[in-house]
Length: 114
Length: 112
Image 1: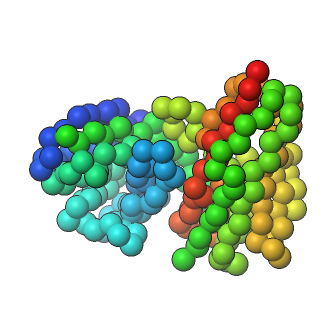
Image 2: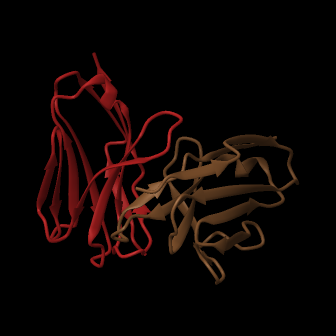
């Protein structure tokens, strides 16, 4: 499976600020996914990022709050904008496996908003 | 959309005993059912999966079963070991690069 890295691994931010999370893959992938995992909870899909087109957002998530970039087939960023303490979560990117069914996750970014 | 329910939310077993986690799904279009293990502070790791053309799949001490008629699937871990302690998530997807919907998770504790 692909090697996936994320930066930063963790951060503590002040409310009202924004943080951009990077996801890098060691091979080209058609789609990248961004998930949120709130403390003690399951994984919730934020959006699907395709190269060369706008990201597709899930219900409850909007582009103004979570803008996504996908400049090439190995990289994506997720920005958490105008943060509040409720945004404190782990944010994970994932990429599909060769069959397109499996998803493999990056190590995650642990965000704390004060 | 798809809804995946998972039970139990917590499970404690003695080392060497078996553990069973059960999930149900709602969307008959789902054809791919992965299971993930997430250790504390780590990323979710895919441990086993099953597709709708298969009723059961085994990999050493873990096995998954699927009843597509009833929309049920289960994870079975035999001869549990302390290193099996983690949170396990079931999931469902139509497959083919489409959305994966996760269950709520089961925290498994294996008591030495």
